[in-house]
Length: 280
Image (cartoon, rainbow, N blue to C red; front, side, top):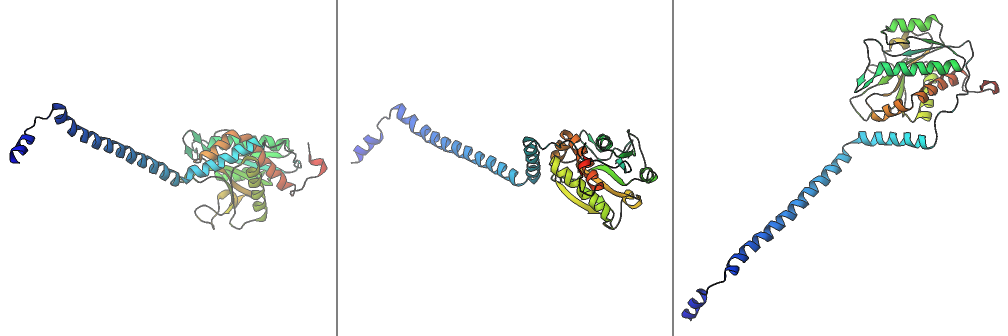
């Protein structure tokens, strides 16, 4: 029994058998580890993408607004020829915010002062076509004080004073147009602001953030223009310079925005009603 056992244990094992079994076990282990590593990395990448979607409301908000813009373009919602007319006796003061060394808010390649001036000049042209007398607080890149701006409008006995600006926020999801009026909520300024904002939203796709009162810092305080202007007045924030969706609309639909502002003013001055003779 022992002799047979010794003879069996001393049997010479071929080289192939001596070297093949051990590497085969390591190959299996290495293969399993490789598959597990691939699965592990795949789960990490999947979770990263999933969390990215959940943590970026800015993109979702902007994409929704961009979809509105695309839908408006597909439906041909460019503003038709403006059919409002304004009596020759009406005077409108259009104020392009900032100017000169005061660039306003700057975001990337965008400067608030230059964008406001460009749109203000387009509003002027549209209003003059409608029959209004338009007074501009500035027509070039110059600095002008708040006191000077108000004096220009008051000296001309303006019926309407619209100061054009762009908003900004550290929250990239913030978007849309809004208007600021006196904290006492004067009915004429409120009606004018709501009409302009509605025209902008309907004809450009910019979100309507509605009318706000006082100042951003204090609802009981007032911006100089609203506190000193003798006419219906508002600070019109066309959109957020920090919002990609707003700036896409402002860049591509600047003429439409100008027509919407002019249309809102015309609608306000005509009491919201059109007569047969008001088309041109």
